[in-house]
Each structure stands twice: as structure tokens, then as C-alpha cells.
Length: 122
Image (cartoon, rainbow, N blue to C red):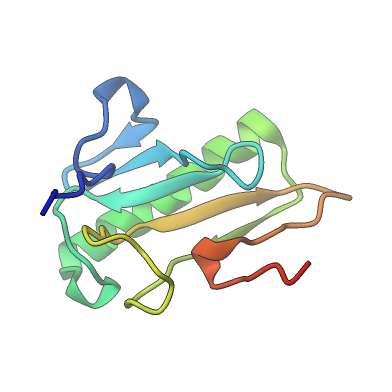
């Protein structure tokens, strides 16, 4: 059986938008809007409910930092902030908990995809 590499454990240092002791901000590999980023814990964990208190504070700090940076860089109207938890969304084997911060722009509807359990019936 081939082991699936975790893209959030094996990211390139030059991809890091910002980082602290427990987490990092990375650009989303399949963005839903300009500036779409993810906040990840540096420790490989599957669930939000496995995050330690220190990690939770760290990720919260990075989320705020990402929001401020995206506002400066891209001037979005707002943000969609979310994460999946559990196996119900067809994630690959080596799940790594991550938080999406998706900038929202005026007159640009957000089109969620299969990562969010959305199936296009067309």
C-alpha cells in the first residue's frame, strides 16, 4: 500500500506566508478565490478536537494575522472561514487539520466544491 504524503507536513519553506511556534499560514493549493489560504498546526493531527490549548491560541493568532495581511494585499469585502472535521467529506487518508480563510469579493459568489461536501448535480 502506497502511503499518501501529507501536503501540510511536507510544504516548502518558501511557501510560508507566516509562521509561529505551533502553526503556519500557507497559500491554498486549489484556491476558491484570490488569496485563499490555510492555517495549519505544525503537528500532524486529524481533528480540531485534538488541538492543544497552546496550538489553538497559536492558530487563532495566525488566523487574525492572515486576515490582516489579506485585507492589505487584496482588499476583500469579507471572509469565509471554515474547516472540515471527520471522514464525511471524502478526505484522503493522511488528513491534517487546517483552517481555510477564503477572501470574499463583491459580485464574486463563493462556489464551494467537493472538499465541502458539495456535489454539482449538473
